[in-house]
Amino acid sequence: MKLPGQDAIARQADEHLVTHRVKLPRKMVEHPIRQVAKRLSMALVVLVATAFIVYADRDGYNDNSDRSLDLLDAFYYATVTLSTTGYGDITPVSDGARLTNILVITPLRVLFLIILVGTTLEALTERTREEWRLNRWRSTLRDHTVVIGFGTKGRSAIKTVCATGLKKDMVVVVDPSEKAIDAAAADGYAGVIGDATRSEVLKRAEVHKARQIIIATQRDDTAVLVTLTARQLNRGAKIVAAVREEENAPLLKQSGADAVITSASAAGRLLGLSVLSPSAGMVMEDLIQQGSGLDIVERPVIKAEVGRTPRETDDLVVSVVRGHRVLGYDDPDVGTLELTDRLITIVRATPGTQVAPDIRPLPRH
Image 1 (cartoon, rainbow, N blue to C red):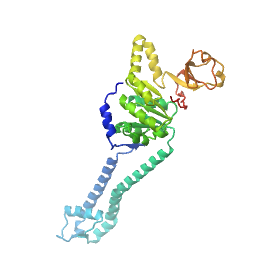
Image 2 (cartoon, rainbow, N blue to C red):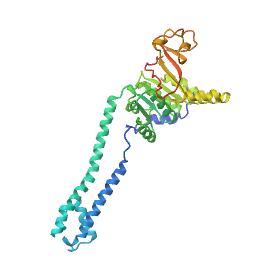
Image 3 (tube, rainbow, N blue to C red):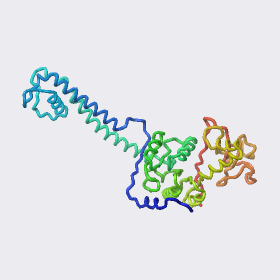
Image 4 (cartoon, one colour):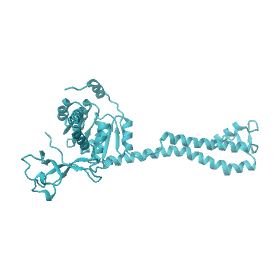
């Protein structure tokens, strides 16, 4: 068994403080820093406008210190007036200045407070709203799909799963990279930022209520730890994991994975097949790509097909799923099709083609 980076994993297991949080998909909004900067700029414009209004009517004001009003005094008066501090050292004395205060300065003061206080209120409201959305999401999430890792493998896995008709709000992505989770949220998926080898991170993804778990990490040792943790939290979920090295596949199965995909070996076999037969390689690549050309789908047997052999169906049948066994189309044990069978067929991909999801749990050995 070859697991690189065991020391690094041991150090991660000793860490007690970990940053993880849930990010739900949302409509694109302006960045909070930009919102604050915009509001501060608006407040500054109001302040400057007020100062120049006062300076333009400086003859109607009285300064207790030197009886004259310059531009600095105008800005000082605008500041203490808009902030409602009001020291009273500079006051409007003429009728025009007082009328200007009533009709112009007072509305500007209210506007100034709305801009600054509104920013705080909006931040508090947004936080409350986000907490409410998060609690509602947790309470309603059931039988969802958790994808560990939002790299190339994870993205492709999600695309294939969603081709079955699974809604995006039933997919939760877990990744330690905030950029990856931001990308997942932008695509409409809920995301959890954190180390998936830690149980508290998986609990935030509601793994214990998930129906299926896809593990698409970059390292095999991480995949083993994630599989062990996920299986401990959820005994009934279907767990599918990807590994780079074929020699690590048995360990993944022992850790609780129902199926293990060896990415390096699969890519190597496809390369070899393409060398021997470029046309066969193109067909295999076409089958792998979801939603274009040919697709491999699983569907139930219809009543009209009961009693027929796999060759007598309208579709190109490659395997028959009977109970927990997967039989080849030419297996003598198949005989004729039964109503409880499911067929794995190759069909021409169309916009309405969907892979029938298998909702039955796999047997545990």
